[in-house]
Length: 433
Ligand code: DOR
Image (cartoon, rainbow, N blue to C red; front, side):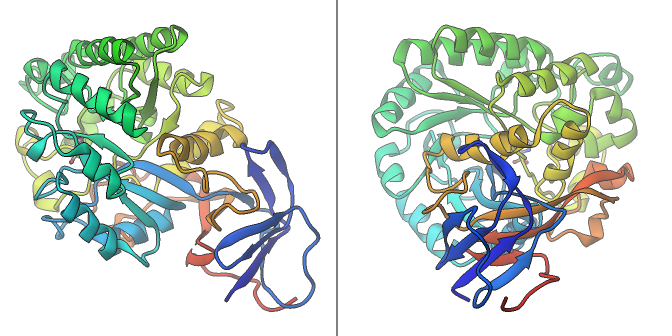
């Protein structure tokens, strides 16, 4: 179907400032018009009355596990999970096997990813094998479409390597993203240092693991003028450092995960290994600071850090479990709870889940709804309530703390369109005219 129109919905597009009922017309995968009267005959019509219509969500931090660990996730399941969660563009992290450090591999994966339920971009590894010793061929990887670089899973090992990467990447016009945990301060990964860790016989991860890494990154970024992107920020102190650096004109952006916005180290008592993530869940004070930081704009975006793992890798003693939780299919609803609480407005939500992530990737044909932009849209029912059930997920993995906690979520993705195609959900009002 070449032409499709979405009528009756409340269209929220922070790029243009639109927040009103409007009809969106899409032709051959691109938005043709926003706000013109519906066409009475011809196009497939989706009635979005009572729903919010936002630009498709963009996740700059997804672990797709391919190549190498397709038992946990693959291109098919990962993009279906993305579409179910309202994401139309996702960036796959390079901690795969092999690591994403060769342009040939990147080109092959991009080809394999074509025609899926969401567009997949592949972040390049900063260092060969993510080992932190020598730089990957950044220029060739960028030419092969890497939209950013990171050694995620690992901190970029040395300040010298980071500096070289920032210098090269600023010439290439892409950001260097960093997993900010100084490894020599990570005593037991995945749990914050404190009484809960101690009660489990673990030393955990002190706040300084993050702040030391963020301080280094900001210092090197300030000096080089390169763009540093702080991944999954978890502490209020690191947030203050980012705010100060921004005020001084350092090119820094930051992302926060849905789990760091909603859970705390206190939840690890109930969740056990399901609450093990890197960086760890932290105090209520940290969580509240992150929420404020997002509302005030110091944190630029929400990113899922969707990290699928096998049941056997979570259903084991804490210190043997793999770190990470899945997040693509619950992210939007968790963000809706921030709107419900009055922390964000709908335009803010679209900004932190779509516009700002698209900007980080340098993609100006998405994250917005204007003529010429991709026909990427998410239709949301802000009043829907649901309890996530891990069995119902599109993801191959089940490591979801919210399903485990039987948490009722409010706000739900009803339909996702990518490139003008319905990739998730079912039109309930369809047909010409
Ligand atoms: O919890 C995490 N899991 N944090 C990371 O940085 C890596 C990720 C993974 O790959 O499982």
